Image 1: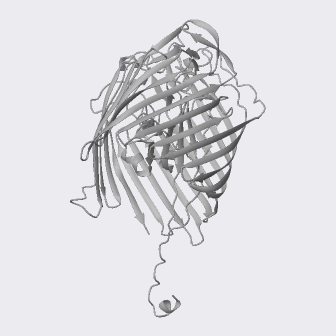
Image 2 (image 1 turned 135 degrees about the vertical axis):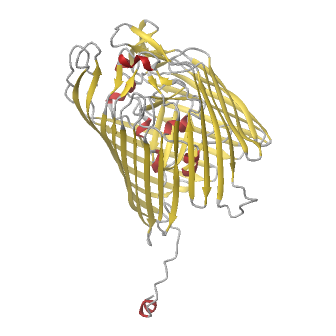
Image 3 (image 1 turned 30 degrees about the vertical axis):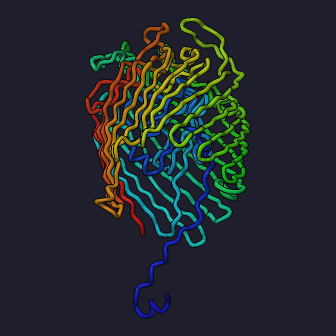
Length: 616
């Protein structure tokens, strides 16, 4: 090298090498009838998903609720229970830090753009979503730039840079900024997220530190008392402006790999949330139009996780101990129309110890697993058994059964009767089967939820606050059918239809999602593999959904319903070498619809841009 410099010749570039992989968190081996609900980094984007809620809508038993376009809050429920979707980021369970959310995770805070894999495990009583953060393994610098724009004055910019060094050192930085100004009843919003990872990974061990910081500013979102824009003159509730910062950080050390042999991992994390905004309550009968107060909330959650296990061929066993330390926050009660409410003093911190164990066995024709977990952040303990059996690659059967325990008791409403109910002690389950016709799977199944206390999505409305929002949900049974796979060559289908047997809260009687798409690389025309095409048309339908409500201006308890909705979306994506062009058109039929009573969803929305990968 020195001789080359002496001769005035440029030095030879360093050889690109692949280093030992960065530590991955353990994820389960789900026992779904047609495989796994898993999305890699590329498939997240070519599915057209902008938020985690967009992905979860594809899973039987899941229903997401949004109050508007991409910046609006979003929650999702499993079998009608909005608490029964838990999200884990690199093994850390994401807690609800904002007391205004009412123990239900706002999925709009989950930074989907930072992950390389999403895996959903359909348990008997809950859905567990495991996110693995983006990693790099090459010494050649890798970078990517995403630029998107579209209707609602939407602009998205992302940048990624990562590389490994000679001795396995890790450097990763990334950022995303988006802004939007919806044209229907909403204020402008923007969000800035920054991601960084430093560390070192060797063949037998690794240490890394990760920081993800998100700053969000959201304008008000108006809610109408009638499903018509003519009611704009008399709205009865709004989502207030938001000015908040969330920080997730952890330090992780590991030895071994979760995919083979013995392994152990330890994580210490700190998750913080700061809310600083002006809370507004609309008063049509008051000349100033609003009453409110400055609200300042700072929450901090510390989580320590020690996991270890052994993997040998089809066998896997693991044990975990999770310790969660909370700053106990005051119970948030929005200001009433009569007087403004001052928050009570902060209570003492408290600690939750949650042990868990998992055993699984996985061979081509059989997948079986047992999972047990002590009382966690939701105060619920659970035991579940799941299995999948296939025969000759033509038939497949899958099922899960589980029991939950929660000693808490609540005052809830059963219709118009006040009752004292258990929070969630019951037996839950699912069963399904499918038959394969060439490359197409056809099947169906059952979902069963036991009697449950249903928490309201308080983030959407003051009128859903406790105790008026708590409802006792009766046992519910749902049936579903699906078709998934290739119809003819590159023409594929992904169809799901669900029917629930009662009119429980947060469950439509009918729900369907039908996607017809073409996915091909046209290898006969482009044998280099530098071309890819995906074009899809998606029709989504849901019948009316029942929400408990107490109108602030009326006083008596009442229930509200969304209207039936039919939405048609289109997407086309073209890949040329390392660049991907994407164009989405949501709500092609310009339908007026809502997913939460009173909040209109966007009419026609176009969203398009490019993702471009670079090496060296």
